[in-house]
Length: 125
Length: 345
Image (cartoon, rainbow over all chains, first blue to last red):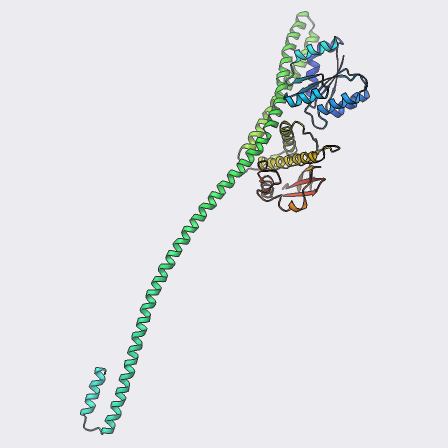
């Protein structure tokens, strides 16, 4: 499964790579990273439909995660990738908006990696 | 008649050597002299009276003046007291303005601290797992793999340290902001200062208004190095200008919800003998008719309760106190640019 992680914090990459090192080693998962909404769109354009799952931060400078979500869900004619939103602001407003825009899941920071792994496994299955 | 003149007259009347004619003439002279003496005496008496009246009047005037002097003295000390009260009130206003701007930052600060703390927790969690895994590899005799994990562990510890420091720096910055200014100039990295306040202001606004978003652009001149400023004071100016910029783009977004991309930019530049910090936005701009009022205390275009009207006025004073200039360029409907110029010597 190919996963694109979008966050403006660069250390997210190291963290995810370590958290999923077993899955990466076994070839179960492949992680790519983008550090802004714009970069994520560029990646998706260059690697069309490669990522089946996108984990995006909401609160980023420039294009926000919600704008990215809207873009993905509106612009992709073929079944768009699964998009899970991750945010430090777990308020109703953010949640409702993400859901309205078609988010497949909504996680709050700090990310519970065990529950994230469970969720990803059910997505794969 | 004056008794001395009367004596002379008596002598002359009894004198037999004088003719009746002579006696008459002398008597007339004596009578005239007596009259003149009488007039002089009268005049003298009158002058004396005038003198006494004047003395009384003078005394009264002096008394009156003394009373007036006392009254003025009292007024003076009352004024002095009012002045002191005003100064105290001003100091209090400055402090509450500072606290108000800190209040606006609270959410941003919380967010900025939460992020590094998440990393601290996440990296320590994953490190615990890595230690277990490393022990397994050692038990299996896979020393190469164990070493690789040890390498990752070291990197994680560095990450934990880095993010811990990051959180610490934010708390330090917050304390510095709320503390009353030490008034001491310190060598300061203005690029780091501007960047920090930009992030805090951004997250503060994001936390208050979930729909808000703006592109932040930075253009820092890395050759500036350290410059001598009072960091808390200049920090407040930068924060104030950034908060205003975000307000201006938010207002424009309300007027123009479609096809408008809010942008707030912060940059620094080194010039001959001075450095510049520019805060620009593509917001509503400042109408010409309020331009000459924007640095006045208590002037605000914000709705009641949303602005103290002291931000720009205090900013202006702070920059002036640094021997610098606070300049503004604006076009209504297109945006504004505020430039802080600080001397480097």
